[in-house]
Image (cartoon, helix red, strand yellow):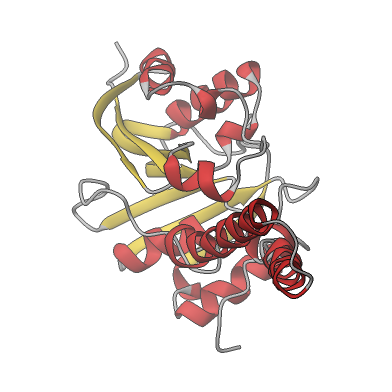
Length: 253
């Protein structure tokens, strides 16, 4: 293997090519058959939207590449045992392993159901880790992030990207409580969720399946959720299509 294969369904990664071709053909027909200018104009606008959306997916959202660490503050010492919760095919796992070359990651996912990744298996994430040359610092476990099979205070840090915002309110509460439980006091948690910003609204104007939290007007719901689970929020911010909150587990009274 020489390239990553994160397995995201073609509908998300290349689906915009279908309306692009369709509307381009309609534009050509409108010019050839001398249809009304307003109709040709509508088809042209829609074709331009499809082209722009495809470019956003490939070059801004970068669904076929590892995520980039949104903050240098996360695990800035560069070492430690890290959990990736809802790791899927490994975009966030590789983000941590590449940005923190002395860290070891345990990737956790339920590996059943469908969340936009075709053939979502531990074998796929390990194959991507081999492409990146970081498979020696990765373990993969099948588990539910709402009931983690790890001892209390057994990890130094945790990350979760575009996973917890798939859950309902109860699932969010349970998963954050589990993260707090397995982190040592002072351990860091980097939560990344979908941010419905201008990039997302242009590329995917129809509803998507990342839960009600991702549609909140700002980060307040997520910061409140982390604080309620025992974290001190130390940083928050946005990048294209994502909102991140960095928390530090408070010492147990």
